[in-house]
Length: 254
Image (cartoon, rainbow, N blue to C red; front, side, top):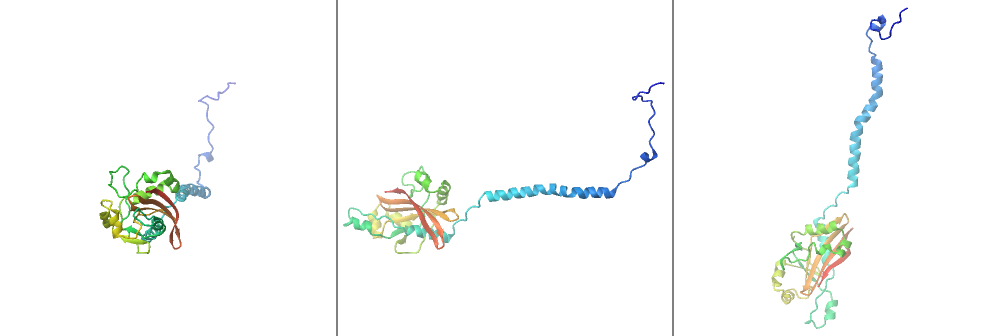
């Protein structure tokens, strides 16, 4: 008997049955069940990306705090008023009969009608009438007093002068900046005190800036003679009635 090799191509194949040769019918109910089974998974996949993006966006928004609202005109007036109403030094020169009494007595200050202006650090002598500049606000004391961001905002806010007007009060008298400048062209303080007798010199205020939603920062420069004056930083807190000074820093004194 001859053995047949399983790899013999000439070996006849087994014929297919008639059932194998007939076309298979499509089971629509089965396909429908499969579709219904995978439909929720498909929906989850399609919705996963938008939901993830939305969550990430919400996380970003909550992570980055919204910027504090800018100060209103009324806020600025209230801040100026709080700063202007402070007690300022009185110059008592050799011509005063009783210097101790003059120093003790409070006098009104002459408020200039234009704000201070930020000066460049490198500037010619007398090219700028204010001491407010980057160098002044870069001291260790200023760094401890308020953030660098707030100090930079103060410098930028005072790049140009604005009009300053407050209601007259017992200790705040308004005056024209041009008039005071003309009187002090040759540092003629006697002429100033002749025009504004019984005062504590003049005061010039900065444009205040908001530090956060409840605090603001302002600079004030007072001069009462060639060797009499102060430069102050004020941190104010918002209250139910306006603004209240909470901290102050003497930046310079003469």
